[in-house]
Length: 272
Image 1: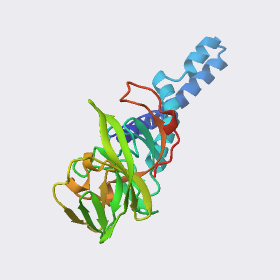
Image 2: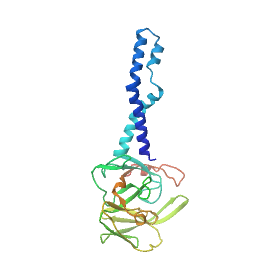
Image 3: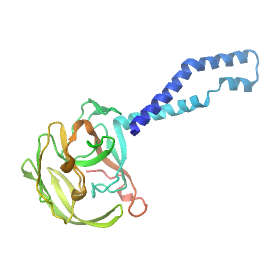
Image 4: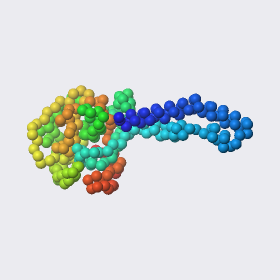
């Protein structure tokens, strides 16, 4: 069960309890209080007669909070945590990011159905989406191919519509993932049709050239850690209906590999 669905259920339950009490039971309590006051009953008795049930009290307190969280998370911005190294070095394991839910259109929470078209993913965007093979799982990758694009990946170089995306060597990058420590990769700066970003390449050779044509209404995505990313090269393209939003900022970062510790330098970093 998705968190959005849990929020929706909590919103409905607290709202129904609060509304039912206001319509059905609160008037009876007010009448009881008025009757006791007129007969000169003790203050304690009057207070007890007018007191809300604990369940109603909690529902009334939590309903507006859940409503605000549901609306903000569903329509504006949603937090995510980076669990793997597929987007190294752009996103580190333990980064907590914010995703703009509005950039790619207004969608109904839970149903994930677009109701207002605002914009479309652009080449180079870092995008969160529901994995086509299991829509209950969220993935994050970089948009490489737009609808209709012809993609070739050969010798670890990317060609889009026949044009090579230039790469410039930028030293080495060392990171850890799971039980693997000291993973060394080549860091390369790639110009993805005007969007300049860093990617990682390992020393192992690519087995064979890969060629794809992106269908209408779909997007071709790749991880920046090119040789350690499970992406469109292996499971296909992302349908427009699976899009969640555009990652735009790191709001917190925890150094998982070093057994904890805040990466202060990453907090507030804009994602490119």
